[in-house]
Length: 259
Picture (cartoon, rainbow, N blue to C red):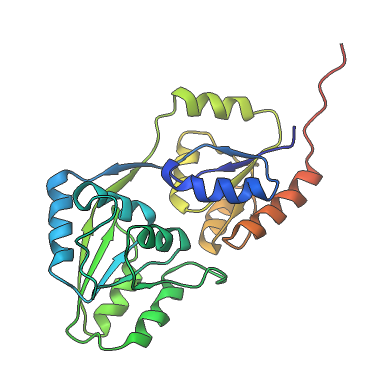
């Protein structure tokens, strides 16, 4: 068996990576290092009401922010106000919005070097006219402060609402057992957020000396500080698959001992 690539994103976000990487021949195993807790219904109703008031822009910081509204908007978001522009930094979030019928989605191209606020902001700035504009940011427990600051500096009125929380998984149960099975054999962690790294370290599922791929320089820097052997890669399946193949060729699983 080839040494696996371990996906660490929230469970609901692993499907896109898993299907694409499996199609590219990557041996994939999912160990979500972030659990998503959706906000109470009354909070979600307030968020949807804010959307229905028709701000110029609604920013979704992640697919989890999109999925959180399903409880009040339904799976197709039939009531979405069409003139409202949406913004997001990653292709998974953009895809989630389009699947729900949202048309005007501003997001970095799928072949972008980076998926981050700094890549989204030039696209929003090109639209212009932010003085006095209403902007709603739907996020977890914080995030995208830099982007909010840029919009505010252009004169926009930015309201941020938390529609979910990212929590550390319990260090027990099925995921704990999966990590224990990985010990003693080569494995490569795919780190797509700094919080996933933080949770993995807190549960001692990720340890100094482990191998990892990081999809952003800040994640790579954090992993280096924790003494992981980390490589920075583009946040796209082809680049991740190529890095995994190179790593797997250098770290074949040990052959079973002869009887």
